[in-house]
Image (tube, rainbow, N blue to C red; front, side):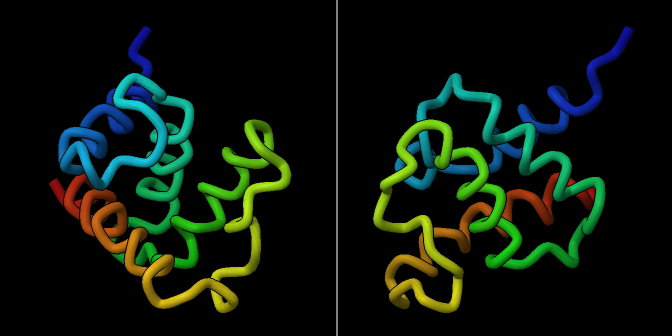
Length: 95
């Protein structure tokens, strides 16, 4: 049986430079959420979508994390952290 979500998660992860990766390189749980975004939204995925997926993942790790807020309340610097992930998800979704 093929695990298409994990395969897509690995593709997305391969499109993100190390310093732009949230979590650790081997933490596929977050990238599986990004894979679901790629399947559901394709190249229409937004930074807000990425942030929401990250929030769902982070809540189980640190429910008091300062960035567990709506995307619109993030600073511009915090919002920019999602841009490489948006690009990676879009690249994987269209390849």
